[in-house]
Length: 86
Image (tube, rainbow, N blue to C red; front, side):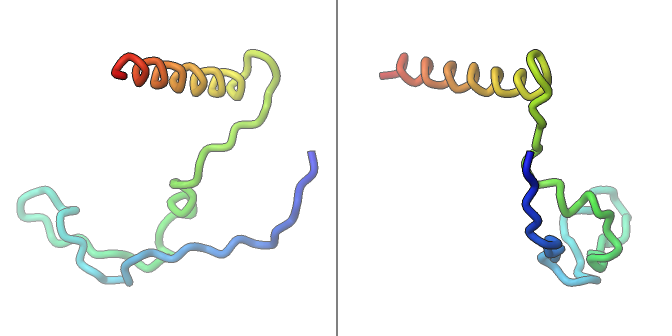
């Protein structure tokens, strides 16, 4: 496997500045308003949560093969259901 160094990825920034009131986040009665924190106060994993999960090819019967098979089966079911409605 060849790795390509693309440099250090830039850290994403949040869409709202620090100390912005986030309406609708507090759902308990009498709770003080929830405010956004500064970007460096959030845990590191939060910035990577929306990236797709990357599975390594771990041989026959592994997680990668199972996920690929499930995706293929789901797409076949969707295609078959689509053709039934035509």
